[in-house]
Length: 473
Ligand SMILES: *Cc1c(COP(=O)(O)O)cnc(C)c1O
View 1 (cartoon, rainbow, N blue to C red):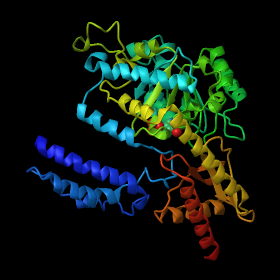
View 2 (view 1 turned 90 degrees about the vertical axis):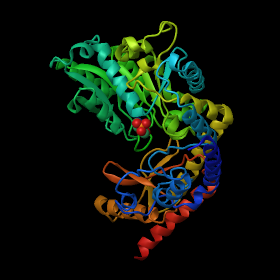
View 3 (view 1 turned 45 degrees about the horizontal axis):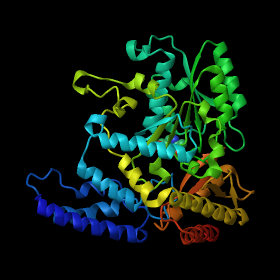
View 4 (view 1 turned 60 degrees about the vertical axis):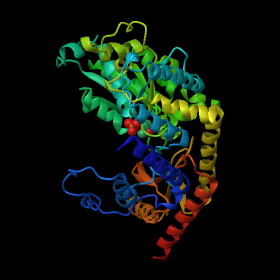
């Protein structure tokens, strides 16, 4: 592609992007395709000759777009969102253009220093202790693995890094049964063994019971286990349940256990002063993760890990072979030493563009609105005689289901699943589910960048329409 063609094509794409941002509601939220239907549209072999951009772009529109789930659709209410925004997209364009690999200060001083600055801004805005320091990683899964590896190395005095497991470690990690599957994965990868992930009981709001945590720790200590880390969830993935941070921190502090707080989704709510009670006591914990790529208008990927003592991370991950040494290493942050990957994208630019464009107050306004819309939707569900809500709604995720007291849980599970599918099949809205106490519940997460009251009114109408259809059939 010549420089002139690049300019022309880039303009074309910007127009397409602007149209998409305006028209994204016109697409079905989820595509109607069968497995392999898309794969089979591509040729068997890679093209030997270069092709014109117009041809590539035509296929993008013809084959790719119809096979996409439109995550930015305001009626996307599934999973947790991965919301983006115009400033974030613009920053991503520049990141790709600069094409910098920001592994150390020297490989792009501005990337490191902007990262330090924006993460300090966010830390202070969230009410996280000013002595904590942050690093951007790709995902919360990686950040949690980093925290668990660091806890492991701190306890083993860096001996597992050095010598490997000796077979007598008997480490234990604790979390509630409602934490994200990335915790199980991290425990597996870190060599702790899934059997050593101790599941702590939850209360009726699905939050960890601190007394049960302490009982589990004491019982393990008696049996000769070594408690390594507690992972608490601030906003569980099923229902955004809030584990009690302060009580858990106190227990961890007492027993010298690393406390990692997983606030991947709900952490954004801390930007609202009225929610900062949620992390009261966190200064006694050790690490905290949240995903601006979920609910802070920063397109995937961008995860922020805050730690009380970065030195432990650096001790765990630092690798400085000769070819990576620089004369300034003592004076600067080399973020490659703060996590697993060496190569790093320039993700801080997205945060900087987003924060400056909205302003912190603009971001708060949007988050508050999402929470208010969720309370509105919650009130409709509560008033409906055939529906119930199965978990508290502290933020903007509602877990609800159709209910009929004459039916068994199993029958209700089937009906609710079919109901959700009939809604999703319309392409006019998209919901996902979870199970709470064995009950199939639909999750309604209201956190899209452009979601307005009219969208939830429309989704509610669709839910009612499909429920009616069940009654008739
Ligand atoms: C989404 C989520 C994760 C995983 O996030 P990734 O960035 O996709 O790894 C972990 N924990 C919680 C609580 C989550 O909601």
